Image 1: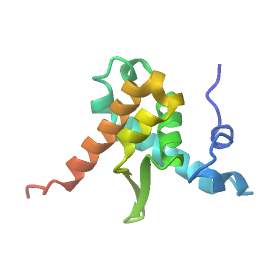
Image 2: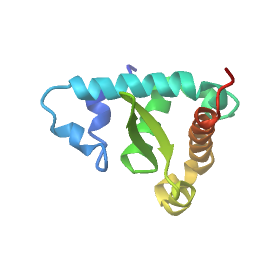
Image 3: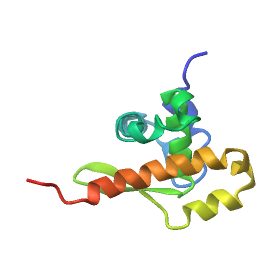
Image 4: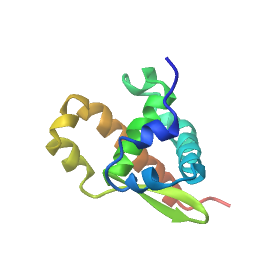
Length: 129
């Protein structure tokens, strides 16, 4: 089974990322896909590899779930210095608990959210120099 294309993934978005479905040129969608793939694969890897669930899940699946959380507003995408930064919404844990479709995946989703928070905390720390 091959990994879904960015266009196939975007068809499931109905929130903050839904506008990507209206783009005629896939350049912006592909850029979002590639940048988010790097973020999930590189910046969240150390946290997610400790999880019983996420350590077994392919990177492509991590990306799809992460972009779903962005689409739903659980993780907010902010531009800074020409790149996206991801910030967990204040009510993210509550959203997971109250969304019936997420209940079977609540623990794994909260682990992913915790990894994003941990990454943001690392960025916020002053660097020794």
